[in-house]
Structure formats: C-alpha cells, structure tokens
Amino acid sequence: MLLQVNDLVVNYGVINAVKGVSFDINEGEIVSLIGANGAGKSTILKTISGLLKPKSGKIIYENKEIQSQKAPKVVAEGISQVPEGRHIFSGLSVMENLQMGSFLVKDRSKIKQTFDEVFERFPILKQRKNQDAATLSGGEQQMLAMGRALMANPKLILLDEPSMGLAPIFINEIFDIIKEINKQGTTVLLIEQNAKKALSIADRGYVLSTGKVQLTGTGSELLANKEVQKAYLGG
Amino acid sequence: METFFQQIINGLSLGSIYALLALGYTMVYGIIKLINFAHGDIYMLGAFWGYYVINVWHFNFISALLSAMLVGAASGVIIEYFAYRPLRHSPRITALITAIGVSFLLENGMSYLFSSNTRDFPQIIKQVNYHIGGVLISNIQILILVTACVLMVLLQLIIKKTKMGRAMRAVSVDPDAAELVGININWTISFTFALGSALAGAAGVLIGLYYNSIDPLMGMTPGIKAFVAAVLGGIGSVPGASVGGFIIGILETFVQSIGLSAYKDAVVYFVLIVILLILPAGIFGKNTKEKV
Image (cartoon, rainbow over all chains, first blue to last red; front, side, top):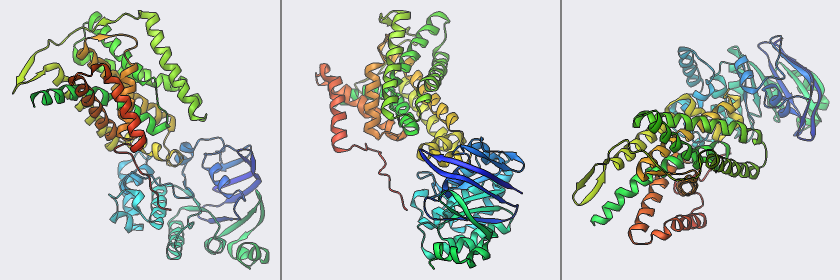
C-alpha cells in the first residue's frame, strides 16, 4: 500500500470539514474521491500535502507517518499536488514555472530528462515556454500545473478538480493525460465534481459526503450504483 | 542648459541612493505585503557601521561597503525573525504598527547607545571635481552612481537567473503553490530581507560619503522618500523602484535649484498624494489580470 489515510479529522477554520475519513491507495492505481461541494475533498488533499494539519488521525505513506510534516517535506517524499484552480505562477514564464516544479531535485541531468518528458507530453508548453504563464488559456494552465507537479518526479500525484472551468474538449484531453501519466507509473489520487469522468478512469473510488466516506467500490461498481447515479451522475 | 544638466547629475547620484532603498521596500512588500518602516533605519545602521570600521579598523571603501551590506543583511534577517515572523498570520495593520515600533527602537536605541550627535563621516576617498562642458561632476558622485548601478544589476540577475530568485518571485505571487513545489517560505522571506537590507546598508555608506554627516535619525526622511519612490514605481515592482528612486532624486534637486529648498521634502509628499490619486498602481504597477 502506497498511501493509507486512517480516521482523519481536519478542522478548516472553525468548520469540522473532515470527520473521520479512512481510505487507501495501492501503488499504480487511480483512486477517485467524489462528492458534492463542501464534502471535504479539497481539505483531505491539502492535509495529505501538508498545507493543513489534521486534528487527529494518521496519514501513512510508504510505511511512514507524514501527517505532521510540512508541505516541502511531503514533496520531497514523492507526493506532488496539482492544486484546485491551477495556481500557476503568473509573471513567471512557462519554463520558469516548470523549473519551480523541480525545486527540490538536485540532479541536473534528471531535471533535463524530466523536462523532455514533460514537453513530450505537453507539446503546447514547449511552444509557449517563454511566454508569461498568465497568458495561457485555462486548459493550457491546467497542463502547466500538471507539468509542474510532474517535474518533481512524484510517485503519487494529487489532482484537485483538474477539469474545473475547462471547455469539454479540454476535459477529455486532461482525463486522457491522467490515464497516460498513470500508465507510465505514477499513482493518482483524483478528486472531481465531474463524477462520471472521474469514476470511468478510476480503479477504485470513494464517495464522500459531509466529511465522511459513504460508499466505496471499483470505478465501474460506483458508476453502476443507483444511489451514486441519483446523487452525482444526474440520475 | 548647464544648470539643467548639473541638476540631472546631482539628481542621479542622490536618486541612486533612494533607488537602493526603494528596492528593499518593494521586495519586502512583494513577498509579505508589509511596508517595512524600519527599512530606513537599516540604512542608518549601515552608515554607522561604515563610520566605525573606517575610523577604528581603517577599512577602505570597498571593505566598508561590503561589510556594511553584511551588517544590513543580518539586521534585516534578525528583525524579520523576531518582529515580523510571529505576526505572519495577523492582520496587516498589526505588522505595520510593529514595523513603526522597530523603527523607533532602532532610532532611539542608537541615540541612547551612541548619543544623538551628528558626526562627520570619514572621507576615505578624496574628492576630485571634474568640469565637463560647464557641468561639475565629482568622483564621489560617479562612485555612488556606479556602485548603485552595479548593485541593481546584480540584484536583477539574482532575481531573474537564480533558483532563489525564482523562489522569491514564486512566493510573492502564490505562497501556497510555492510550498506545494517544495519551497521553504520562511527561508525565502529571510533571503528577501537579507537582499533588501544589504542594499540599504550599502546606501548608508554611500550617503555618508555624499553628505559627510550621519546621525541616528538620518534614516527617517530618506526612508519615507524611498517609500514614495517605491510607490511611484509601483510597489512590488523591482524595476519600478529603481526608476522611482531616480525620479524622486532628480525632482528633489530640481526643486532645490529653483530656490525652493525649504519645500524639497514637501514636494516629495505632494508627489505621493498625486500618485495615489491618479495612478495608484504606480508606473510599473501590475494590473493583475488572471484567466479563469
């Protein structure tokens, strides 16, 4: 097991956003967390990546407890997050944004190799490498945010609402890219409001509501589940 | 015409000192959104350090300048660590008031320890005047201008080309995303204070050479003028701070040359009011647009 979340409780400000969530991810899987707005999905991701501290519970990654580690340490361990809303560095060029992604990588030849891989996967980024990242379209910014996370050579990538605000054509492309990234050996934890898409590419999924796991199963089981269909897939 | 060029020369040398100071304001504002009102006092510390090492340890200009930069950098880092870091998540006004408090502490602390007398800054470089087509330029003016420009170019290289420079820019646009790529925010903020305060330390030694006199309150007025320069250039913008510094310096010398010396400070504050009314983002201010 690559990542194990045990009875995680997180307060976000005064709100008890996550009320005892447990789930796990095996190496090589795509796992989707789905649920409505406010179900606690983003809070869970931010807690795993070290931006938030849990009130209680454990996060175990490669047999090490990481719930009290700060974000830079978590990145160094091999977990990279693509934050909701992309959060690319505006004012920095596309190239510089990607360089920031490899901030903790010391080996220069490794960085160069990863650059080639990222440019191969996202040819548009190579075309625009000297452009200010803020001038990219929404879909391109999403690709940049994913490329930046991949620059750290993560074992586990956390994707927070990658399809949010994108045109349908980009949504399909982004999900194809997620599958490819996974195929090449990166484990994926995906949270999405687009439940149908998220479950269709997932090995397994967890349905969250009001800070708790309500249901779990394989991607196709959840897609076929009547309750899930009613609540998240539009009937 | 000659007077005009003469004032440009005088304005550029004074302006380069304001520019060095303004850079510190703008960098610190860029990264933690704090107007560091104690910044002018680091310039005073730099000047006192220069005074001390030249008189007592017989440092030459270069070693006095470099050591004053180190002292400036260290004071900036220490002030940030003890005074501002504990307030990182407090309302901005709390940190602002603390900055004013730190400023008073440095000014009055230095007056208490070393007396508030004005003292003569040792002239380690003998002044030589050159007449070029009716315009008078001293070697000190050239030295100030060249030193300031070299430091500004170095700063620009650090910000644009180095890993820490990129980290500074990343933290200033999006601290959360910066943490998510593995940047240590505290370290980056310390680094920013070190850079800005080193420039202030250098400016202190340069002003000592230029005006020959230093005192514990010398940082107040230039500090505020450099703040105006930073706002004029667009607070948070590094090129803006340099340009703003030169504009304020030239403006001040012109006001003096037309016989309004008594109003030279007032004019700078008037400029601040005008900018805030008509161009609040400053000359290089970013009109941040983001695509969603």
